[in-house]
Length: 380
Image 1 (cartoon, rainbow, N blue to C red):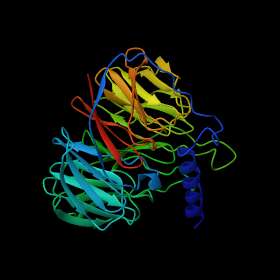
Image 2 (spheres, rainbow, N blue to C red):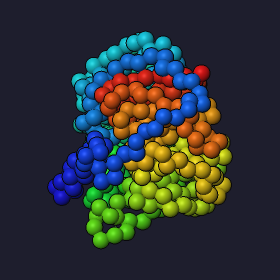
Image 3 (cartoon, rainbow, N blue to C red):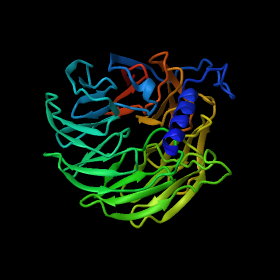
Image 4 (cartoon, rainbow, N blue to C red):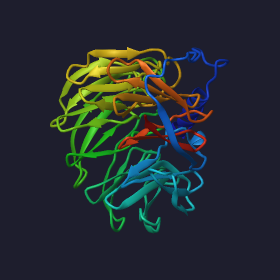
């Protein structure tokens, strides 16, 4: 009960922060000034994919696969849209309070609910294939790969369900701190393993086939007199490539980790409630003050930083062509040059916040506001 009360208090606190305004924010968001547009940005289409994210506060985003965009809402609807035109292909009602956004891959769309249920759908028609049960609410996007659907429950357990039948293959159990940020980092499948960032500031690698832990590495250690000061959640996107894993913690640091063995390679003091993106030899991150950083992936040294968007509650960056893209609390999308971080363009999707990480497929970028407004953008 104590943990539940603390988590509820934290949710209220963070929700209030995400809805912040100049009146009630200790540090008001930076004023936006006119910028000389270095590029043209065209909005191809927009489509509403349901409400609920504003109440959830967990950065729920759509997923792109095989020329389609899949999204889910708190009312139980799953949507499939044509990625190029935005045309609705199908919509199904599951009867569940869906959360965390759908995961897609290997001919399956999977999404979890606030009641711990997981449903798998046919991506072509939305027809339900199976349902399974996790131990608590699922507020992270499921990962699909290797013939499995990997689901992370809010109590720290990770479940692997068979892709075709929904039967439980394995479960990994792990305790959590008593006070955490609202949200969970989604599991990431790569190189025959499942990678997870945990609320105690560690990254864990599990063998995909059976869930056996391969290694664990601390990114940050909670310090301070209160539980609030000791929060070191890793809730945002991890980066995994053939050699390294990159992770950033709240109230902590950004760490580069060797993929094999989990040995730390370098670290940099930096606090982020979001995740990371990789652009060639640069790691991109928005810190909790609203500064966007580009770091050298080999050393962690700063290549550039952009402070013009301070205190605007930025999303995790996305990479579209030669630009980094972040959303903010007033529904704006900002394009920054990867070369030097200079602001190159700005478009407004909605007057509600953009919390979810923008998604990129091909030459198109997709962003969604907390009111469910989903937009697709192309650089001109």
